[in-house]
Amino acid sequence: MGNTKEHYDNHLSRFYSWMTGDIETSVSQFREFLKQYGVEPKETRRAADLGAGNGIQTLALTAAGFEVTAIDFCYALLCELKARSTGTGLRIICDDIRNFARYCDSCDAILCCGDTLTHLESIDEVTELLISAYGKLNTGGKLILTFRDYTEELTGTDRFIHVKSDANHILTCVLDYDDAYVNVTDLFYELNENVWSQSAGTYRKLRIPRGFVAQTLSSAGFGIILNDVSKGMIRIIAEKV
Image 1 (cartoon, helix red, strand yellow):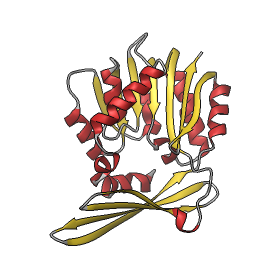
Image 2: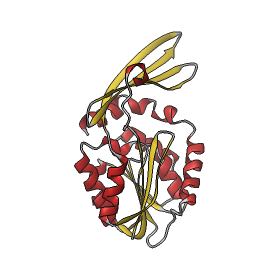
Image 3: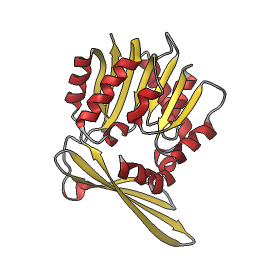
């Protein structure tokens, strides 16, 4: 994950929260998503948020009554999460999500949301993480995954995606595909004192087949509760049975 961590530390973390929008709205929406699918504290009240970032999922989990271990490799985003958090029941860890098993055990829920799963280096690493999650969940515990669907390869000008803009900022992504990965270039434009500046950074994401993830989960012993695509994001909820 070397170049991905560097991309977040040196480029994306600067505008990540602006890009994701109003955090209170996002937390509220994710809280409703958890309610809809019965993700709630049970045996130990513990949850792990892998790739917690600035805290959208973590804050929704704590609002639901979970004691959360939030793990991310980007210190700047975890500082934002810490500043937003209130009360107790939250542990923040700055580390690679591939090391999550060191910090988590007997969880009622494990989450890996946003597009975090695609930051892994290989399909084998995805398999290892999913199997590790099964081992760290209590019976009846839920694994919640979201990741972007890169199955269909975009070509030509369709590879240029307008992400967000306002009077002083513009964010565009450019996607370049190969068989197993997509290279993502973030172009960020900022207006200061009537002068536009550009900063750019490129990192690699893994193309993860939705069917592969569902099959791997089933083989590990999970029951699949949700498996769909919403607004370009694959959403999977699996329960340890």
